[in-house]
Amino acid sequence: MVWSFVYLALRRVLELLVLCWRSADAKEVEILVLRHQLAVLRRQHPRPRLQPQDRVLLAALSRLLPRRRWSIFVVTPETLLGWHRRMVRRHWTYPTLPRGRPSVPQQVQTLIVRLASENPRWGYQRIRGELLRLGCRVSASSIARVLRANGLQPAPRRAAASPTWRAFLRQQAAGILACDFLTVDTVFLQRLYVLFFIQLHNRRVHLAGVTANPTGAWVAQQARNLVAGLDQEAAVVRFLIRDRDSKFTRAFDDVWRAVGSEVILTPMRAPNANAVAERWVGTVRQECLDHLLIAGRRQLVRVLHLYVAHYNRHRPHRGLSLSAPEPSERCQQVDASATARQLHRRDVLGGLIHEYERAA
Image (cartoon, rainbow, N blue to C red; front, side, top):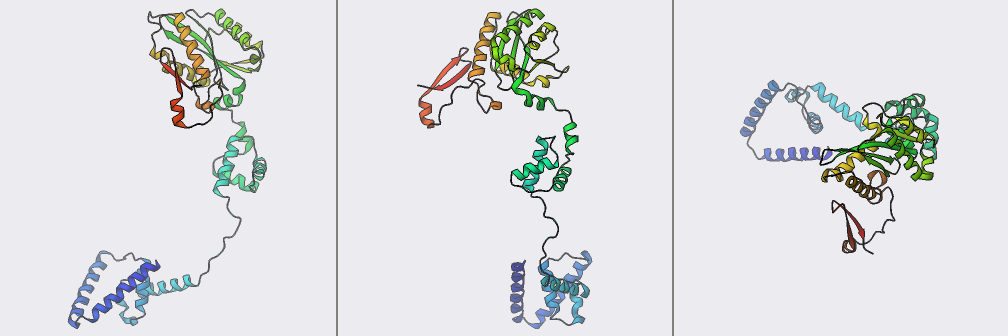
């Protein structure tokens, strides 16, 4: 604003110097033209919008004219006097310090909301104690005010809400095993059923069996075989997630209850309740089965064994920080050009899938 006023004042001074070299008649004619233009503008815009530098200049020029000539201005004399009083008041007004308790910084507010969202059973004092441990001093009333502003209720109400399937699976993933059926149609229009199990915490897949006639006895026997193969790992399984398919009989459930596991049935028509198993079905179709013609059961078993070995030992997973369910030792970071020269490719399923490793 200061520089714009200086520029405007300098421009007006130069205009006054130019006017000194003009004749009196030319000045009178120009004054008449300007007065007429001013009258036209007053008819079209009764209250023009003035910038701060315009107000300063008009207030300064008003001191050079007698009061009876103030009618030439586009504003009233009272407006000019008001501008001058405002300039004086602003000049003698000193900055004041803010009063009251300082506001909570935005970063601390974000941290409070995060702690309350991730820990629904934490109250205001519990959140306050955690913040003190992190080096942030905030009162319990400020925490309550921040949570109310973000639509979060107190701890009892937040904790009373039933957990979602996603939260439940994330909390119990280390002891959850999911199972489901995958159907494959051969070139002779025979439908084969694939029973598989998948561990949620590391995405490791166990291929139980393939058959054209899945009965309750067959499914129960495959469960016994898997429990025997898991050995000590079977005791770690706390929950088994399955759907309400009639092929899962009481004998199948008894196999898992015998090792201390609880069988959880998913709701009707709710694939998200068994999302990890459903995701694996989509993955094996997109990466393998949709690109092959299956002639019979023996070929399907061989194909699935090769793909499951690739899935468990080599395929990276975003949920596992881009590592495999059964990760091998990661190579140390080396020069990219040297890695490209020492790269070895191994073909799986006739080149449908490629696995890469550094040459010895």
